[in-house]
Length: 140
Image 1: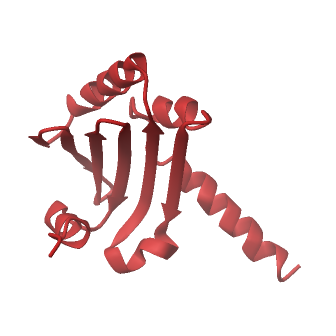
Image 2 (image 1 turned 120 degrees about the vertical axis):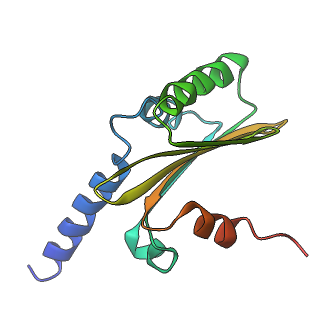
């Protein structure tokens, strides 16, 4: 029983974390597109992200996305961007900072490359500047 309880609690935590972006339009992209053979989904919870002051990292990368996939995801992002408090766009990159929920920052990142598209949802206590400095360090 001592081994089962931590396992159950961990699984319950992962279920909660994987659905943290419920209420956002992009949730349907994670739900429906992640099961495709050309898609890779990554979900990391607070345990792995604690040193970055984050509680959830959820990404979806689609290799060789169809035009309809690109259009659909961009429409979902546009829908969520309507409530954003901050937008940044640079070429094929887009960032939306959403209103905080219970003192938790929420961000949507989107990148459209020539061969793939990437959608990332992040939440936690880290500010946008902290995330950028941690993950967008310039290559030397």
